[in-house]
Image (cartoon, rainbow, N blue to C red; front, side, top):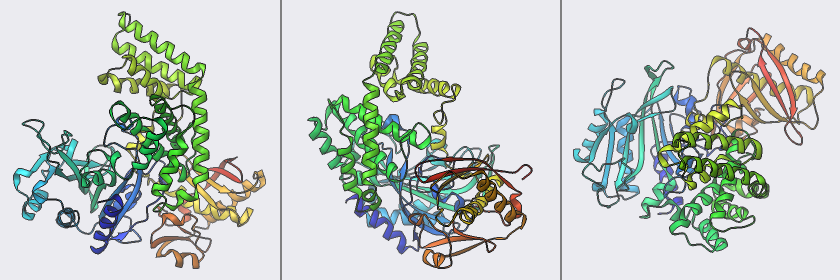
Length: 607
């Protein structure tokens, strides 16, 4: 079964079960400054898991593109990816464990034709926070799964949470016996020995973890499931390597052709890294991320430069990444048409970054870095430094190489590991020390990247909610003062400020800035009511609602009206009246590209 067929079968199956299909939205999170990229299928649904009404109803299904880098060190093995697609179905306070488990079994055995006797499951074993999940086990047993194929595991395996606080609950994971021999007498699903392949995960989201660590019941019980497209496709094709599926075939064949190396032996790891990183960077750039030294742009720059550096291990000279990006676009362009539309931009950004990478790695910076890494290793061998001291000095040097020469830490780390300075058990210590150095030197978005990827729970605090509604007032005020050519092209809200990007050909005068601020505050003082209606996107536009991100919406949308002043398609959250905002102040105005400007707004004192 191909990946395309798997996705179609999954979506069709749950549509028949009364689910509405969600759009496959941009990798860039909307209104969530706590994450750099969409990292799971449920990520765009957090407000609705917490109780907001979704425009499409209580049963949803999707195939969502995702990007994660928590496990970037694992890229190069047979199964890990930074960019991947995730199938999922959700119940927002509708059906519960019985339907979720029964439908999972039906899909696996009837639609995918997996042998029932080779399916194993794991369930939550219980602890001081929550009880043993006997309910889920009872449902599995009633379906016909014998007790010897059901395993109870603890929180590290069968508890899902969005972060240190927020929605969470026990889960039940499904595995398929590959037929390989057991790795030992204690071999079981979830031990990553390769015998049991994880197919699907049903999360029973019934708790909310508070900041103090305590659990409370959510307002509604939710079902959240996840099935990785690439991994499941590999399993269905009888392969234990995702890079041997049709999703990567042409990319790897191109790498083989230009490097004259086969996908085998020592060449496999660098080929996998290159294929994965180019695929991820291509999609991220197409979704609007520009390689840079901050936030999401830093991730894309890191992916491109690491891919370019891995090419050296295959003997590749000169620029080669664009040839692979073309393969990504051709492979996925039929489903993701925006890749074709953004082709020239993608190739331009990748070529610029690859050129910069070559300049950096051929410069005296690399000579500096390699020289001192070798010296650290020699000191360790001579007994002048302990292993931990050598690891820490190496990580400090990595930060200096980055700050001074722009050499990315992945490259320095590889040098240290190849020399023998860093052994596998000291890898985490190396990265920990590097991140500490980055934090101390105030390098933007280095130390917090992994936290942002691990989190992703949108901040719905009172301050953020006020600023979110202020975004709509700002958008309309800018159109009133500057003209209807103004269009929102992005926003980012934190508890500290609102950042708003929009189209406009020239710098705003101080008079214009203060006029916009005045208009917003007048509407706040007027205490205009904020109301929400659900309707089709076409109907929303007919009623005059602004909607500049059409690809993010489904068949039904939420339209927020602020009195008779503003009407926009949006996912929320919002205050009930503009009077709740209190007041705002525009603190800064700057350019962010040709014909694009950016404003920063904060709540006025006492708001």
